[in-house]
Image 1 (cartoon, rainbow over the protein chains, first blue to last red):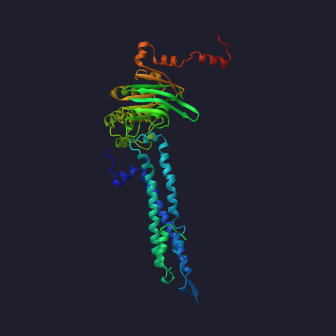
Image 2: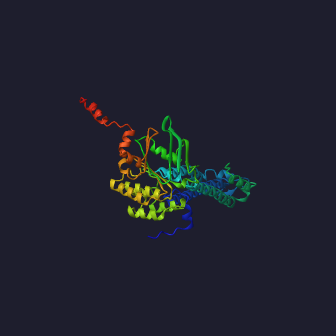
Image 3: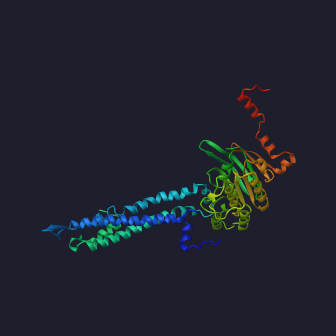
Length: 179
Length: 246
């Protein structure tokens, strides 16, 4: 029987998960986690932005009028809780790494083989690569979405109601600051 | 040559091995015998560096490290393969890590034992799992093959096959340390027997010496262990309340 041809990524990742573990399942978890985290982030941020924008207006004679003296809520405040999904994803990297290690005790003691490999790092590479990748992906997603949300914040907020130095708020949010 | 000097290992307050010293030259087939808890498994695990211990273990004079660990392989009744990986997957894994992998021997043994190449190891029968475990240890390309009760769960015919195949394929430089309870079965396979009792080496004899003295391995073990053949009869008498005949 001919072996299926593997692409470079498949070959690379197979050397970085515990032998026999189906990395495609973990990839599915990661992809779904990122999708759900992104959806959560979008829903939370956009609903907050919408509420904040509403507070910039008054109803005068049945008409919605912008009160130019008002300033929209600070951007980091609107972002609060919006990245909870990714933070959860980052927290899950610890049990995932533990599971990868425990895998070598499930159904056999393959840990004996891993511990006598000439390459001392293989065990750790296989236990930690996916958790580290997941943490990095979550971090990148947080920063990218922060920038994307900030662009929405700039575009959808009437200019007179923007804070004096909005870019400072972006930098603050990118650094992990929320309020 | 594996040299074990003054090796001691305790689990908490319980001493598992006490001041064990043993030399295993290359090319020897050594049987390691002893009752349950005698320290056989502990000794093998200390040699492989799985357990912290006192004393030294050297391989040709050098401590066993990642630099020379490839010269040792290990087959255990606990199994050290990956349950979700097929034998073919194991071959790829071993080839990646052990450059002296013996592909021809692997193919030959897989064919001989009719093991499926693409079924996950965890889905094989108990006997087949043991076979795969031993095959992997034999094909790694190691000079010293350590086996801890590798045939537990295999039927007698299967074990007989294995002994014969082993004797046929082992090269003169390959060393086997076989820990087992199956004294009589391995008697004609091994060249030397080491007896452990309560963490001490209590016997060390070559099969040549046994032949010269006209004793079987079982006789030697019983003698060394001071086996009391009337023990069972006495115990049964006490349990059933019957008077001893005297």
